[in-house]
Image 1 (cartoon, helix red, strand yellow):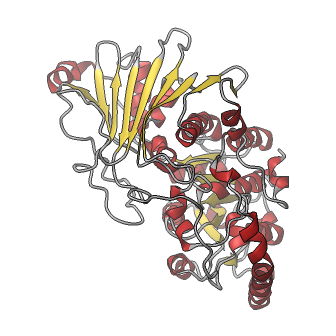
Image 2 (tube, rainbow, N blue to C red; image 1 turned 180 degrees about the vertical axis):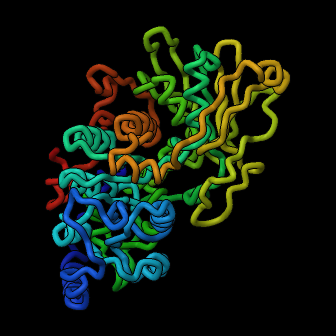
Image 3 (cartoon, rainbow, N blue to C red; image 1 turned 90 degrees about the vertical axis):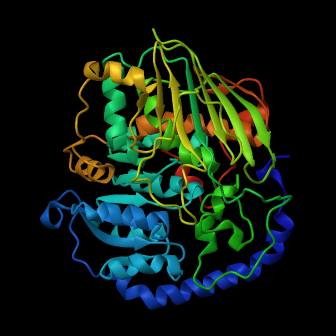
Length: 485
């Protein structure tokens, strides 16, 4: 039985009537109290298509706490964005307070659909910093209205949702950027220069690893969580978005959602986009032909494994040979590394986690790339590759191509793309196949079995249940419209 097929209908039915009344009552209070601000935003906005104040992009922000807050601060720090609207399903939560206080003149909304209804014509772009399962609907509505979109990684919750987002980017011709910041830092420009110069060539193996503790480590889960009282400030129906109904429990929110197949994409979806993203793009890996779980410790139908080793097998692409990418997660699931690997490569600009610290000595993360004649080690985000052993690196030093400086960080790159001045470096056409490859890995984790994938027909050919999971669970009633491009 898969996680989404587990029945919770009886519990939902029993609690549904009371919860709907509570939600209606809460929404009535919210709308009454904030009607003036919704109808008469506190900032002077512009008509779409004209330049904002000082040429800045008028930005609406959905998801304003935790990682969403960091994205908003980074976009604002460029000096190229007017923060005109803030939207969160829990505007009264402590973690949303800092952003609300920083931008007191921005219009406030609890439902992104209402935000678009009220201010749509006056918004240029939208940043989406919400849980994985809710990226899709917000992004699709924004693009359908011609809004540029910055979406935190991974793009969406299912393979099919990512496919629709790529189609929408193409159809609506908007600037669309996924938030893997390393795609605008030295790692990106080095990898591009070294592959073009033939320094990195004929790669056959890639090891990627992320061994820091995760929220679900140490947990044993046999069912969904019991219902608990709903906070008065939280619109739970809105938080669930397109996913199937589950009774509220605080064990699902504020980062805990990443633990659950129903809401998140685990360690792979979280960190894969920072560790092997440039290899995926510049080696033209595309989609794998096979994904095989080599080790799954603590397999569960509800939460992600305690440790995973997954082999992604990519076929030959033109003159490039087949590549096997092996992914390792779990605190003690360390990969075999070259004897001359040395210490981990650390990017000091990695954003801090919402809880705890990143200790890369105790819990390393990074990659090893095995190419023709040379071996490279790397880290995450913007950290650059190093040739190993050090003696070989020194010998080649004078022959390495110059690495150009980045003209813009990831956030400025997006805002400039909104104005037609640059192209998004991690647009959906680039980021989509990366996230779809990871989505296949997540299905393999979930089912604990090997998948055979036909890259031409984009079908899983050896497992019907896995094939069904490409689409993800059907959207909840009332949310179907977002699945039409």
